[in-house]
Amino acid sequence: MKEFNPNYLDFEQPLLEIEAEINSLKNNHEKTEKTENKISKLTNEYESKTNKIFDNLTDWQISQLARHPLRPYTLDYIAHVFADFTELHGDRMFGDDSAIITGLGKIEKHDFVFIGHQKGRDAKEKVQRNFGMSKPEGYRKALRFMKLAEKFKLPIVTFIDTPGAYPGIDAESRNQSQAIADNLYTMSNLSVPIICIIIGEGGSGGALAIGIGDKIAMLQYSIYSVISPEGCASILWKDAKMAEKAAEALCITAPKLLNHKLIDKIIPEPLGGAHRDYAAMSSSLKMNLISIIDELKMQNINDLLSSRKKKIESYGDYQT
Image 1 (cartoon, rainbow, N blue to C red):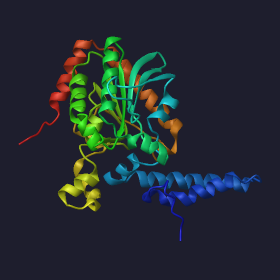
Image 2: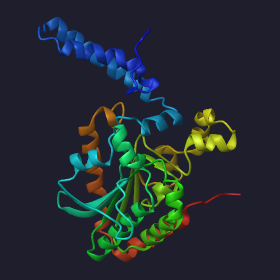
Image 3: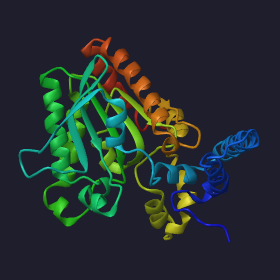
Image 4: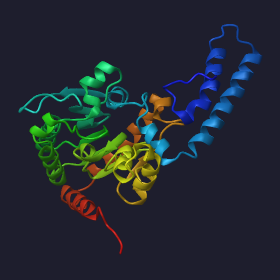
């Protein structure tokens, strides 16, 4: 019986055996020409099989990739992409929500205000970060720094990666829906460029609360949806096991959302997904982010606000 590695999704399991053999050969101190040739052959086989798998992914498989346990999170990108970052805390009303990271960032010549969701890696951090699900104080913290960005005329960059806003009683008692609504209203009218990037899972109002922007981009294997496939399946078919069918119906993947003009750009991921090569993914993200900031900074702010308004009003177009 083959070993199952939880860090590999079910459709990635065929790659596990090849990768293990490559690593074993690379760790062999007595390398010969025969060994090097075998490594080269296995590497080509690995790339070929990976291409074959990733060229035929279903929407459900892409949903699984967006939630991959090894996928880079916001703090990983901050470490790899930003030249400098100073984290800022608190909403000045209730407390500091660690499910949302806020602060001042810098990439090359560009200074900006940064807002992003942060999930946890181990059990302790997952609880601390509340699995990336923000409470009202998180969105009010984000709102505080949006207004700071406008005051100092700094662009805003947001990284979106959340299953959704936290639905608990304590969050509702502190006006979760109003906190989200306030952010939507404010972001619609802020007189600074706003760039929103879905880096993993963009779920419901929790994502939208920091997702109104002039340019909205998605990483190649991220998802963006009003509800999770499991939640949709539970409502429509009374069975969460129908999530694969729901994922297809929801049109939650980057190519489909680009086709519906709900996003503006797809940022390519390295072969096998972002979790396979943090450096390559960070380089791709950095290059695209600089390009978007340069483009938006060239526009007159009144034109930018007019374009943003038209973008928002175009959502929900339909034909009879």
